Amino acid sequence: MSADHGGPAAGPAARVRRLEALLEQRGLLDTELLDRALGAFLDSASPANGARLAARAWVDEGFRRRLLADANAALPELGLSMGGGLQEQRLKVVQNTADRHNVIVCTLCSCYPLALLGPSPTWYKSEAYRSRVVRDPRTVLREFGFELEPRVAISVWDSSAEARYMVLPRRPAGTEDLGEPELAALVTRNGLIGVAPL
Amino acid sequence: MADLFRIGDRVRTRRTDPPYHTRLPRYARGAAGTVTDLLGRYPLPDRRARRLAAEPEPVYAVAFTAGELFGEGDHTVTIDLWESYLEPAEAEPRGGDAAGAKALAREARK
Image 1 (cartoon, rainbow over the protein chains, first blue to last red):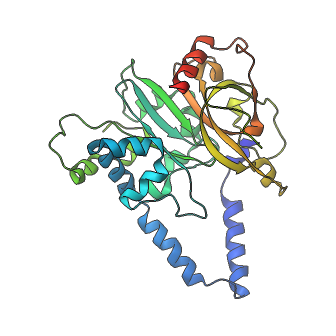
Image 2 (tube, rainbow over the protein chains, first blue to last red):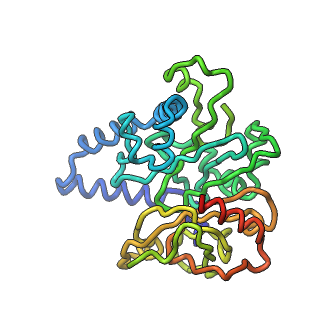
Image 3 (cartoon, each protein chain N blue to C red):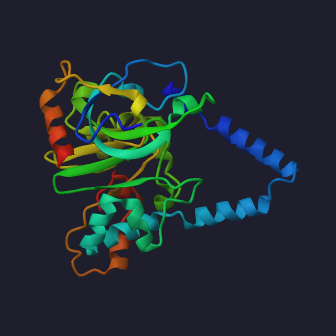
C-alpha cells in the first residue's frame, strides 16, 4: 500500500512528540541536548554544501571521479558527510552530460539529501511532482521553465529505498576563469535536483 | 547469504499488491529492468513496518525503460529495490521494450 505512504505526516509526527514527552517525563531525555543536536544538524544542512561539491568536481577531475564512484568516501574531502541522521545514508551523485540529463524524485514519500540540500522544497513533496516526473519528465521540466533539447536523454532516479541522490550539473559555459567559490555561487538547489539548468 | 543478482542482470519486479506497507512502487510492479548498482544491505521495510524480524538483504538500483513501465516515453527510471521485490527475468521481456532493455544492459556493464 505504497500510496498510504504519501499521506499526511501527522501520524508519525504525533507519535514522535508523544514519545519525546514520555521520555522527558521519565527523566530519560535532556530536551536541551536534543534541541542542540537538531539545531546543529539543520544549521549545517544547506544547498551551499551541494554547490561546493559541484564546484570542486568541476575544477578537480580526480575529485569528480571519486565523487561519482563513491560519494560517501569523497564527501569528507570537503568536510561533509551523510551521517547527520541516525545512520550514515548512502549518497549517489549522478552526472549530467551533453546527451544525458538526470532528475531526482521520491515517488513514495519525500526522500531527499537533506544534509547537502537543506530541507526539501514544498513542490518536491507534492503528489503532482512525485507522480508525474517519473511518467513524463520532459513535460514537468518544461513546466519548471526548463526546455531540454529533444536529443538529450533523461534519467529519472526514484529514491525509493535507503540511498539518496544528488545531480552534478554541467559546468556553465564561459566560466573557465572562475574560481571555486564563484562557481559554487552559480549552483542552485533546483539544479542539484535536476529541474533547472545552470 | 550471497546476493541473488549482479550488475547487468535482468530482473522482474513482483506483481502482488500486499495489504501492508511496501517500498515497491505500484507503477513498477511486474516490470522487467536491469540491475545497475548494488546499494548495500538493509532490512525489508515491509517486515519492519509490521514489527517482524527482518535481516538485512541486498538493495539494488534497477533501471527500467519508460516503455516498459508506462507503455510510452523515451526516458529511463531507476528505482532502488530490495531483493525480495525481484525475481530473475525471462530471457526476453514479455511484449516489453526489448531494444531499450538491451541498451540498458549495455549501459550497466560499462
